[in-house]
Image (cartoon, rainbow, N blue to C red; front, top):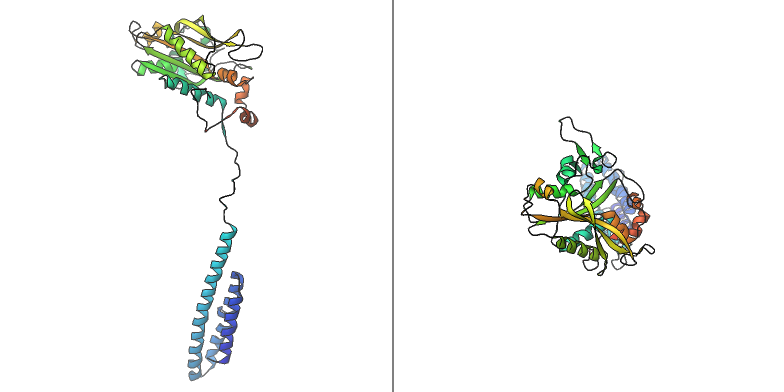
Length: 356
């Protein structure tokens, strides 16, 4: 190998060792082996030599090209490995560092109350039943012994949907979840024990009423069911829900077309302080009664063989009482500040002992 080739080899190897990044390495590679590189130019000069000299010179240049090519490739791999190692060190995650706290969503108080109700009644053996928000008048009114002239069937209280072209019966947005009770009695054999939480709709809107709200109704159908069973079930629920083992509960005679006898249920309450279970005042919280024989008959059940009781309560109302929420409309305003104050962790399960 001639002196000029030895010099080229030596200079290239030194330059490769001095290259510390991909850019410097690529400059050496292109300057030596590229289309205009030093070694490439020497190869192009072979055509000017005689045959013998061209053969010897060509062999030497080919050996040098192979040697420098391997050296360039090796140094490129070393630099790539070093750069990868440096990047991995720079991007290394310290698993001992505390993670940044991410904002977490909270359960809406209404959903929380439904979970609590489901847990409490579930411990009493109740199943959860569901039904459509759009009901026929028969399921929503007629089957429940509500006559045509009843005020609840007027357009001032009920949202009616226009009849469809196929002539289907007139439909309404359900005013109560009692239609779920009717559907359950029509499709399942007694004994029955269900609750039916869900959305309901009535034409009313103020600080204590909303055109859309939530109700939870309960139904028990079995043989030899008495008023004592109803009272025991309702009292147990209210005392667990409000976490008041000695909560005063009062039953008052009332009227509902679908129960006979009918009763409204009051709890002890202080009008002055708003404390549940304290004071000498009473606050109505739900309606109840023994299922009317006509309702049982409408669902194909013999009232002489089967008896039952039912109850219904406003979920928003109980939530407001339990958590001190003053305005019903705030439930639906989608105010994140309000939800952060009244919301609940999704990981906190309902506790039967405390109702929370």
